[in-house]
Image (cartoon, rainbow, N blue to C red; front, side, top):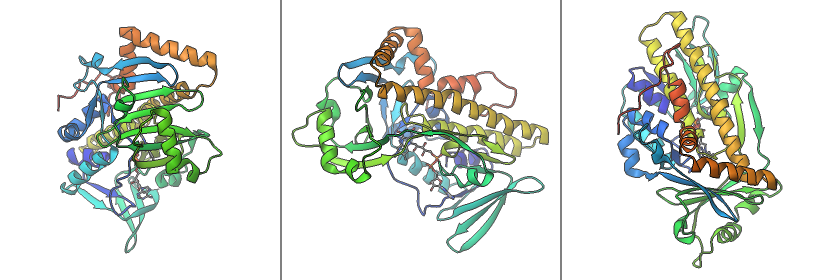
Length: 401
Ligand SMILES: Cc1cc2nc3c(=O)[nH]c(=O)nc-3n(C[C@H](O)[C@H](O)[C@H](O)COP(=O)(O)OP(=O)(O)OC[C@H]3O[C@@H](n4cnc5c(N)ncnc54)[C@H](O)[C@@H]3O)c2cc1C
């Protein structure tokens, strides 16, 4: 949807094909970082997102037994971005806003309830999609196909592109409650990563609820893991709450660290979870997918406005190269490190990780560098988003929403 909105804004017609009958409303990602807010502001979504979201400038790295280890304050980045904070807003709200936008745009045709079954390159350039529609089968032809079809991507499989990586043995459980956890656990921030060798946690606030995430051991069944009485006991173990925790949402999911071997084959490209998936520690999965979408759409728009075949080739090659590097060198590297820091069981390594976090937070320059990475500003300033091939000058921050 971000790619479609971005292409349409740049005057490129798009057909958006979605298997579901309606946009999904399930609770998934909940954080928007500074670099992403800059891009979404350009799409005209900044005001609405800020009206509905929570501005969270500070987050904590904590230890379940020892309490606060280090506090990180994004306002250190105020001279570099108009958005020196995390905006907490559940993903389905961005989806809703984008859907409303796309429905109103004449450049966009929305085909919901339509499942892509295969993609092919056309002999003279361009690509086609075969899709199962409610009425039968349809083949659509276009100059480019963007596979934004999630981790099980049909587009990626159709291209025969490998999805290298691994799956964590533990699954992650998300339980959401309407109780204000800041009241139950005074002193916590609105986003908290909490290390523990037995049951690490992450606690974060969204406009609707507080959300707790913890690991579920490999042997435990889904029924056991999501049983309401068990969730209640676990939340009570985090912070006693006499009236009991109303649990308003629960989900169990597998977490992977995987990157597609290639982000592009000819005129077909992969973005978002179709191209890379990662642990949610740091909240960068959805964010980096949005960066892929804007990067690619800017390039396609330049190609569509008239470039030589050689320049078009260089644009797509640059997309595939830059976004693959960001996925590996930033998104995968940082989320693996963040996850390991929380789940570390070796006492010596655990202490060393805590000492490192304390040292980073205590040193202004190191804290700043750390938060530039965490907010995805560093990768965006280093590589730009959809910069013409060969251009490396850093982009200026977007204007304030
Ligand atoms: C439970 C859960 C919690 C999460 N929490 C976080 C978090 O805290 N932070 C974070 O950053 N990320 C989180 N994520 C990940 C985040 O939600 C994803 O990174 C993000 O949704 C990726 O967007 P996408 O558009 O690439 O893929 P998706 O959101 O998966 O969208 C793909 C779309 O393609 C459609 N589709 C699939 N196959 C076809 C086909 N063959 N034909 C047509 N349509 C098709 C699907 O129906 C879907 O609508 C979470 C994910 C889950 C499941």
